[in-house]
Image 1 (cartoon, rainbow, N blue to C red):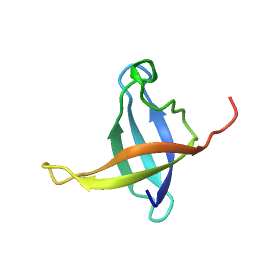
Image 2 (image 1 turned 90 degrees about the horizontal axis):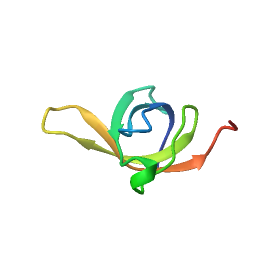
Image 3 (image 1 turned 90 degrees about the vertical axis):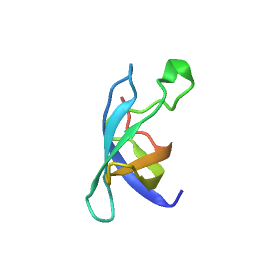
Amino acid sequence: MDKHGEERYDSARGGVGVITAHLDGRELFFHVKSAADGGPTLKAGDTVTYEVVQGEDGRFYAINLAVVESDPP
């Protein structure tokens, strides 16, 4: 996981959000399990690492998210 980005939005119920990549400013969508179901605890402003995959629809998505720096509440 060599990519870094800032998490902009997370729905605690669905784990859906957008990451803004630090290198090129590209927006990548993601979907993770909710924290209650064992997924990562994410909040807007967190710095995360991730991998990029291209979906069947041709869009790029972030997977395998991990928080490396969390903004204070």
